[in-house]
Image 1: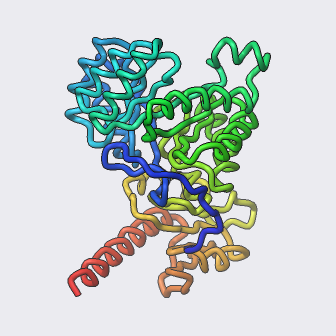
Image 2: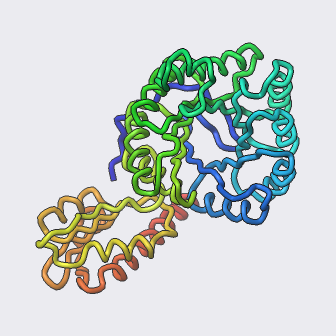
Image 3: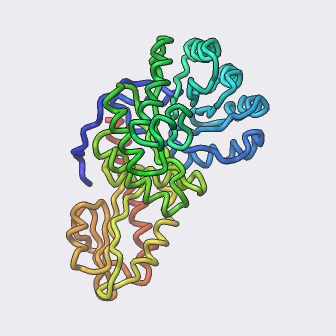
Length: 370
């Protein structure tokens, strides 16, 4: 229920990826990437829709061949959100997906090849009003930069990024965003801090190849959390060796924890101890499954005893505080007459949450009519 946010966002210019604003005063955009074969149109579209349903604003699709570019045309027609095409080396693929309505091109101008090919891509982006994302990765730096720095460093990632930025500047193209990802937290954070001082364009954040669902989420939360808390970042992707839908969930959990952007329920739950009057862990597992469809921002506290329960209730929309046999129930910090049966808290709390959201929606509708 906190309303203020002490984070001061870095000032950046704004671009648009389809109908999604990136940078400036726009909300930090969440994106993920498909891991299906792009040539499998049905599977790719299904995954895009699942990612979008989880709350993603953008989805990136790898387009490595002309065959996949032809598939992309069909995919784009069925996508509910703007699509970013991930392209390397073959400039003709970029031209083709631009023709098919791509919303953003993820390229590194330097690996497109000759100056005339780079110019062709940039001119095409200008003609179709398509932004570009420069994507630098600590694991694939240019050979001369690797030789110069001997190993990936923040300065090495910055030099690579600025090399690509300079190409776009030379071609009078400013509709771009930049990422300087690395699998090491300190390397990525250092590179983003340096880059944030060098350019005004939006920054796309990510800890690349972060790992599996648990370790990758932790690593991403630490790295991106450090940057976001400093006001750095305009769009994010959590890179997990897991279902892309999980990437979106983790992204929103990170943003919610920093009070930057909310989607769905923010649960405050105790880890449980011998004081608990009901099974907190079991209750939380049930609630998360039952309420996965809720997208409205809401804070709900599930506390197993009266030590911290009433205090957490003060900063929650709804709360339950454990007590003997029947637990206390709160709405917006106020104790209610209703007491919840400790054996059925998940069911009862779900009912109260859905009723609260219905009443809130009805109130908003009345206010809009007035």
